[in-house]
Image 1: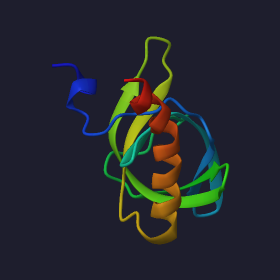
Image 2: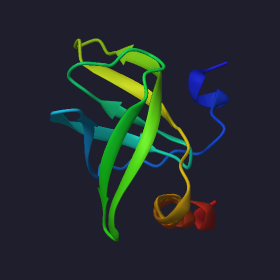
Image 3: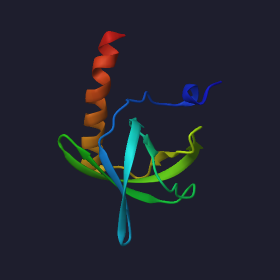
Image 4: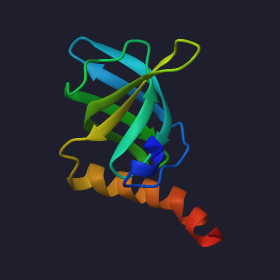
Length: 113
């Protein structure tokens, strides 16, 4: 079974501006795809698995701050690193904004199917 077959959510290929925020620094990262419960991002220095991260993602309707946990590290054939992250305790207004954003991306796909 392919890893993508085990995913619980459909993913949208998007790349809104994003950064990982750490005490005293931020790292700009590239989002490659997103779902209701997580992201896959390209990063220069993958953090350890299961380390709690805070991200800020700029969406058309405003920014959201999301806590997430790296659950998978992937290094492609060119040596570029990426991590799959799962959201942690996403709730309130940030959850509403994020889910509305993902729904808007996936709605055209569902209508075409």
